[in-house]
Image 1 (cartoon, rainbow, N blue to C red):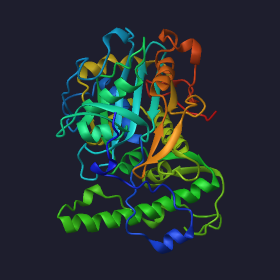
Image 2: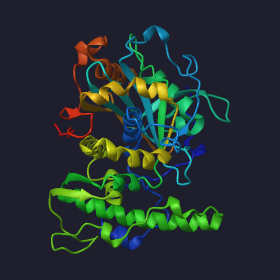
Image 3: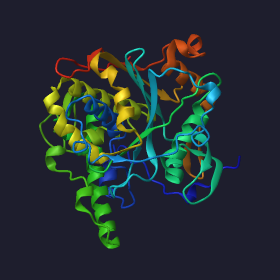
Amino acid sequence: MARKSQESYQQFEDVSSYSSSKEYKKRKKNRRGRAVLRGIGVFFCLLFILFGSGLVYVSTGLLSDLTTTSIAKDNETLGIDPENIVMDDSVRNIALFGVDSRNGDFTGLSDVVMILTVDNKHGKIKMTSILRDSEVQIEGESYNMGYLNYTDKINAAYQYGGPELAIRTLNQNFSVDGSSLNIRDYVTVNFANMAAIVDAFGGVDIELTAEEVGAVNDNLWALSQEVEQQKETDQANGTYEEQTYAEITSEDYIPDINGEINIAYGEYEDGTYHLNGNQAVAYGRIRYVDSDWGRVERQQTVLIALVSKLTEMGISDYTSLISQLMPYCETSLDLADIVSMTPILFTGFSMDRISVPDPDYETDLFSDYIDNVYHMQYSTEGAGERISAFIYEEDSPYWEIYGDTSQVTSSESSASGANGSSSGSEE
């Protein structure tokens, strides 16, 4: 199909790391990097919904700030081939989207695209991260441009057609013969003020290299500049809303080995650092230290750290956290859907993840700039086979080919909350 011009939708420059002191002197006004930690809210907001549904505290009042929507769930609308559905109610796939919307709504490019699998059969929660630059076929109804059928980056589907088109895009591109993703529901998180969620947990402990520590400070500085530029723009446009802006203070910067704040020239050391919300946001944005894959791994490292803290909490601690998280979430799940997935939370469970594409498996991966926009091209069908093996294991026709390709496996955790722990380790 013809490739649609990228000029028709909003583009964002990815300002992920500023390692040169020249960048601080230039202070370019056109930097509009994302002030978000990609992927945090997407995963654990759903976990809180799930945990919350298993508690006596679940009520209309507790979840009153949760935005619920109704979407079409029929096979045709969502691009599901009924002949390829793996009939196992104990495995549920849900689309998780993260949008970088600063005005509090749930629209825009979905720069986080994940498939969360609640696998009660194997006692696992699984994360499949689809890199936002993945080139896919987007085919389906849009909001206001009629029926679309063209090649583009996967994050454009949500902007053009919302969760229905985004879910359809996942189902159509990554379902394969004998194994459909069968995604019919979603959770979307708005990243405005996402640092507050990390702060609600009291921060997270993360092992950082010296280079990553410097990049955290770089990104904090960049974020502070972006926020000020955004405020100026919004004030000029009459859309200024103070509650939607991150505030970076001097206390957010990590001191160097001499105990000083020296953003451009500081020297740092490897170690375990306790990151607050703003620092975690900056950590999740790091890209140029290594790659897009490194950034995804950092996002998932933060997710695992948050879930670890979650499972160590007592039931009495959940109520306030659920209330704080709900305004950041929009979902098509109803209470019956939620309750059906809760059994895993009352037994030991592990957390596994994969990223797509992965150069070790998607060996046909080719990256290129199209209309000055970075695209990752690879066989989505081949990736779909690996996703099938990861999600359905021995029930997948591709399990014997791929086996377990998970990149991070956490230790068993107790979902009852009070006594369990969950920790991830890099392989």
